[in-house]
Image 1 (cartoon, rainbow, N blue to C red):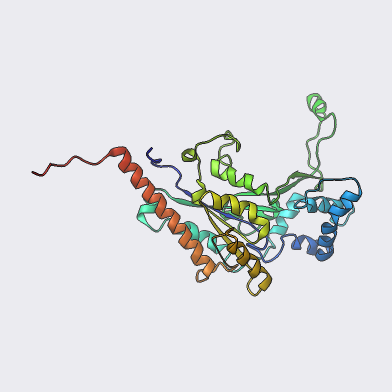
Image 2 (cartoon, rainbow, N blue to C red):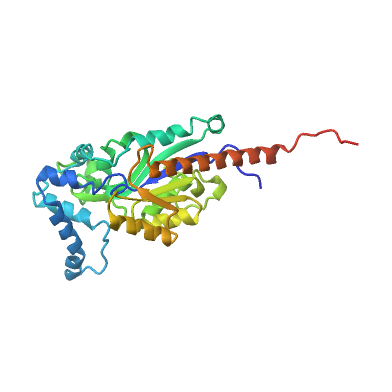
Length: 324
């Protein structure tokens, strides 16, 4: 069957956030703002699963349990006044690895520099999928370059029992409170794969497309082979596996000078979990930046070739004279 003629021309570069685009964890500005010992906070978080089990919980969501602890700090007055506006403001304090956010613009510009790419309307979109805090990412310097962000969200106050009746009577006040009070959305290292499928099928662009709907490969908005996933370690294995298995490209980064992080990503490559790895340095001359440019070019060239074949398959060869 001939391939699609003018579809599937988007290249999606999907980024992890913590230790991929920034050297540490995004919550550091939050701890600084309130004078909280970040190391102690994470020690408490690491101990929480045991504390929950001691209180009767048999199943604990380890990747996102820290969200509950942030809310506990709010209730205790340690994060007094913390709301989504403040989280977005704190995002502006995040410091990125060298070459960020410039690398986002360079990779997008790359597909505007060759006529054959322009003719096929090839474009690069950047996405972040993170177990971190969405409002902080949206407040950071990379936000203007992002097509979408999947990360954890809080809500400031939630409706209580009987609020529908109050709405009908006109007495319900749908006003947000002064502080975050509940988790509105949580994503962990396994459910990150759902976000990848949303990009793949296009449900992030068209809400009428359900992520679990059966959609033929040739009708999906961004084929897996048009994806590049960049992350930092073993916690990203579920997404690495999905993208790898379906023909996409995978790349891991490590902090320059960290032998532990180097060994970690080296082992991922040895296991076949990733295609390549490099230092978390995104300046133009870096190995990582060159690998990303090469990956974008390879995908773009394949899109061009597929479109050429599709045209040939649909139009056939022009008739010619038969030589005697």
